[in-house]
Image 1: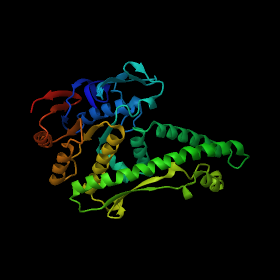
Image 2: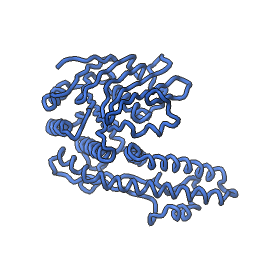
Image 3: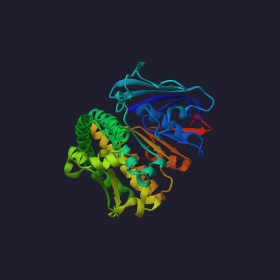
Image 4: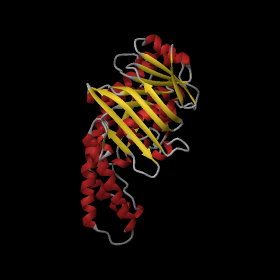
Length: 368
């Protein structure tokens, strides 16, 4: 899959840009704060219907402007697709495929698969469990509509259950309604649990492979899935914990409390990893995500690499360049403050590339 061209209007610090993309490496060079990341985030928004950084849509509108518009023309397995995202202050977001608006944004998820690697990914290691669950859900949802439907259903019922627990704390509760919600919560929760476990299992070997390439096979890494659900029976766990839930006024067990364990040498990478090891860990995880989506969709996702070489030594930089130059990967969008890194990529993948200089939101294509 490829983006042929990208139009950006009033998105963050970019007033207006028209970018003609190539099928290989699209490289954006500029100082920090110039707007390089905003280009990648615009591409992400056209695929996932939201900013990579979880900002409210209105905060992505250029300061002083009433709206932003993003439009991309894609080729996906021979099909031409025009994706459109428009956000106007005080109005509902408009998302279209080939000029037809979606009734539900969830229908768009997975149509234009991508993987983004960003300095913000450190939150996967250093942040709370909700960040790692969000990562898992975001990957699986790109290739499994049924999973996304169960996830939406689970979260909706969870809100209803928690609202009831708060409203009826210490008073009579509609136990029949609670029983219905518990059954529905358990049904979707167990579906999600199985899918998440399968995902972690499938990712683990590929993840280790890419980490070995980056770290010369000197360190063992692992992914594990930890759940609060006893004996793989969410309905029983909900019943067992009801009194506790009633006292605390929220649901204490379920897939919304689960976590993804990230270990280096048998210990949490959060505690034991150096900056370079953590960066390699995250890059390997995202490369494994790329392979997972490619295998499931039969489509090479877009690969967005934002400032990927920061905090890495020369050897690891060289290895990353070698990996992303392989035929495993398709169209790549990469940002860097260092033109030398870009030149090194071009040496290894000179058949298809474009270089753009970004300065205060202005994007210009330049020669080698």
